[in-house]
Image (cartoon, rainbow, N blue to C red):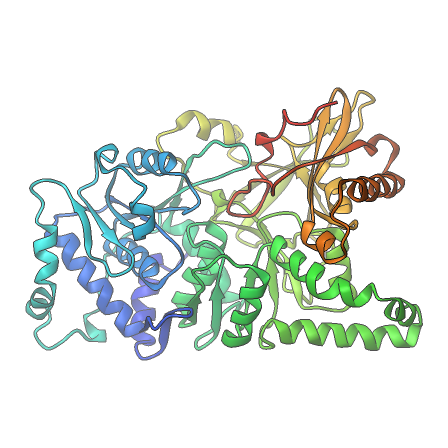
Length: 557
């Protein structure tokens, strides 16, 4: 059991960092110190008390990353209630289901999302609050929430007649074994389950971040991954708030253009990201430089290549703000070509591995210890084993246990029983292997692996990674049709337009050439029979993984 109490970490942090900047909304005037955040939490606690909220009651939060999202989350857990963060990408019917299934009492939501929800379908809610100013958007008949909020300043004065100060910060005492968070997953299989995370699971991740000094007092981070997802939440928000870091919340779609500008302004000390963001930067910023004829020639000369790689590294580091100690990449598989290039230029990046069910971290290594193609070392508070159905196989299912592993799925004992082995290990659903130094290597998902008639294992993600590096391929999806592999490709129309090549006959010629090049670089059993053009980007989870199950019946022979 983790020694540090999860809730007390924040009681101490708000006291110790009272005058430091805490949350800032990027591009807006909204900004809070740690003391001001503590005061906002105190106001919400008075409201919860007025409504006789009990420990263990659920409070749902949905909306873009902003200061009030963080305050609502913090107020919930420090009161002893259970927070239910909902991804803003979920459609209204999913949101209705999650709010009802979790039995949430209150809902904090952005105004734009509330417009699309139907209050008559949210039968258990007592009140709904806006994430733009905490005003009451809706209350159940007989509730006095709006009236209480009108007189909130008077209530604060009555509770704290000398004014609210750091000595007034005192949060509930709740042991780490209690469930504090319900996180509804949005996986690539389309089925949403409520992951029950305890104070211990959350403290396991946060204290790991503190112990390894991922973030320190006075550091800065730019939070652009959705905070309702375990990965961004654990480090950009929870670890950051526990140590006195200044969090700037992007609150916009993180396109490379918007991100580059924000990195330049915020100059973060740590960057937490997903592969898609880094791969787009590689494709848009680096590939055009290294694909020039003169550059290719210069890179072939041993003494020049080191200097040029040094210049590219500096350009990339400067573009990301210039102050970060490392970039941590997680949430999905990294393109091997991009990974190899970043390793070659000695860019300070590392790749970790985790899942919502572990809040999320399973493995990580600092960039200067990171072994290329791995996903870092299994954490010292976690154990991993490789379960092989066939003892002679080189890979098997990664199974884990330890401090970060969830309590189970909420109101779903069948799914909980299914995901744990009889001897108590969590089945991750990922295939891979461990080396002698406890570095973890991931090959693919069990559900996406294709088994050929000759008994060969095909990992479509590996073929897609090669295809995505070929000219004018924006993204791809390899699926099996009539025992043959077919690649669905969404074309990079912007690049085609810029060269005047956006005509059907040109695209056909380019894709035929890509198919030839792809098949010359893969094993015989991995050859793709055809490339089929797809008209739009593929639908993705918040981690930016393609929702594969939606496309399994699309390819035609």
